[in-house]
Image (cartoon, rainbow, N blue to C red; front, side):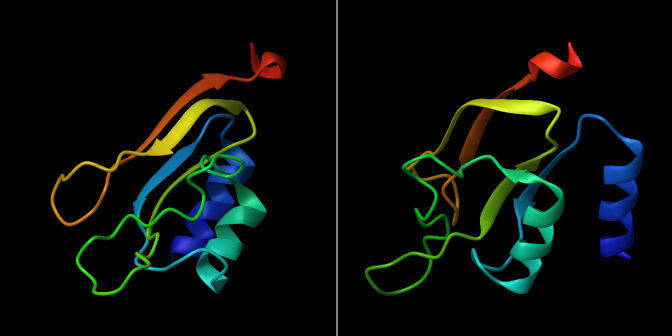
Length: 102
């Protein structure tokens, strides 16, 4: 059902943002699927591999929170805010309409 909805949104909408806790990490099947249809707001930022889930042991935290957007939008700024806000670090993205969609 989710795959169908993602495909439907790509086909029908110009500006789409899909964000949240995906409970999976970069390079998995789910994230590769999303990357085929949307852009990852953190791609190209210094925080692309920054962990967002704090409640695990070890030196490396997993990144499980994502902001995906359609190509009708461009990223002005995106980052992981490394301040406590529950068991996840918030992910922030400022998006604007791309020049082609104005």
